[in-house]
Image (cartoon, rainbow, N blue to C red; front, side, top):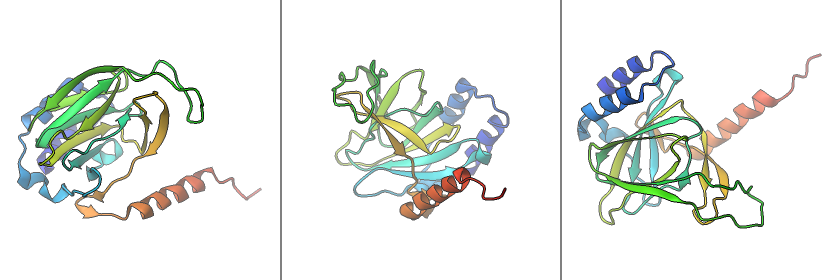
Length: 209
């Protein structure tokens, strides 16, 4: 995995993002379990996000592990570029248009069902790209017997995104967390508390006069 990480760090040496170039690099890499096995940590109840590389603070490269039948909510990418490569198994991507209305979380009026744009099934070594100008999407493992492992690249990195209700288009904000970092399992609750303290420290007014 390190040669791929080195190549990506070189590509993102400046602030320019060449989508075609990144897709080409990911397509050239042929999945080898020996490269990514130590990052592929599954959970019996939900899919997991396992951080592989922070890309000098410019992006997050991670491995997602999907148990049989597991999937994400419909979500956006907080104005980031999203690249996905399947390392093992299959992943079904369903794309949606942005909701026409923008009901807030407390609105009593129901919105309209979200409009589906299309569905694509990706197999091992398949690559796809997504961003907020294209729309929203949901990813899921369609197999009821086999797990799926996928490589995800987000630039710039983000720590929250918006989730959407397929029936109403209603949105809510979701905190993004990792199941493991650099091959080591982490305490998710502790990480969330650390983030809260960091944000509080930033917004806390100075007591000096």
